[in-house]
Image (cartoon, rainbow, N blue to C red; front, side, top):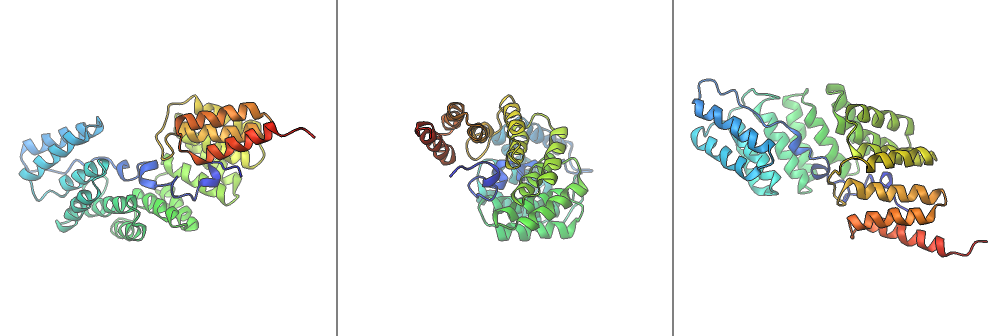
Amino acid sequence: MCQNLGDRANDKTMMRSSKLFAALLSFSLVLAPIGAQAQSVDQLFEQGSAASAAGNSTQAEAIWRKVIRLAPDNPFAYYNLGIELAKQNRSRDAIVAFQKVLTLPNRPGNPTSSHVLGYTGLGGVLADTEQFDRAITAYRQAIQLDPTFDDAYYSMSLAQQQKGQTNEAILNLRRTLKLNPDKVDAHIWLGILLRTQGKFAEATTSLRRAAELDSTSTWIYTSLGDVLLAQGKTEEAIKNYRVALNLPERSGLIGSAHTATYNSLGLALQRQGKLKEAIEAFQSAIDLNANYAAARNNLREAQRLLGKPKE
C-alpha cells in the first residue's frame, strides 16, 4: 500500500507538533518591562535574547539564571529560562520554570502577559511529552486570560491533532488566522488537515497563501503537491515536489522535509508509470532516513511492479 504525506496527517510519529514546526519555541523571547530594575538586568535580557537567537541555548540558559539571581521576582526571566530548557529537551526542568512563572504575580508584557506565556509554554512542554489533555487545558487557561493571543490557539490546534480532534484543530487554526492572517505554519496545517477531509479547494487556497508568505518553505510545496496529487493533478504535483527539493532542508520527524518530498515524488512518478524514476526517488528518501518505513514499502512495491511481466 502506497503512503504519502497527506495520508500521514494523523500519524503521531509524523506530527509531534512542537518538534515539527517548533510551536513552543515560536514565541519571541520576552524582553521584560524592567522600568526601575537595575540597568545590568536590562542588559542581561538583551544578551540572553541574542544568545538564544544565535542558537546558543546553553549560554542563554546561564544568562537567564543570572537574571533570576538578580531579579528573582521577574516572571519573564523564568519564562525565557523555560524556553531554553525546552530546547534542550529538559522537559521536567522546563515545566518547573513555567510553573514558577504562574506562581509570581501576573505582569503585562510583549506579546502578552506573563501568565499567558507561562500557560502557553507549559502547554508546549506537556504536548511535547504527549500529555495532550493537560496541554489543552493549559492552552485554554491562556486563552481565558488573553483571547487575542494567537499562539495559544495555534498550539492548542497542534495538540488536538494528536488526539485525532481534526474538526476542533481546524476551528482553532481558523481562529489563529483570524487573529494573525500571516501566520505561515497555521496556513500549512490548515491546508494539510483540510486535505484529509477532502476539501481540496480550501486546502489549496491555504497552502498557496502560505507560499505567498514564505516562498522558502519546503513543507509548503510538498503539502501542496500532496493536495494536487490527491486530485489527480499529477504533473502539477510533480512540479511542486521539484520546487520543494530545490529549497533548503527543513528538519522534521522523519529526518528532513526532503525525505517526505522524495517519497511523495516517487508516488507521483509511479502513477505516471515512470517506475525507474520512482524507484530513484524512493531510494533518495531512504538515503536521507534509512528507517523511513513508508519509503521502504513504496520502494518494494515499485520494484515489484517493475519486475512484473507486462500483459
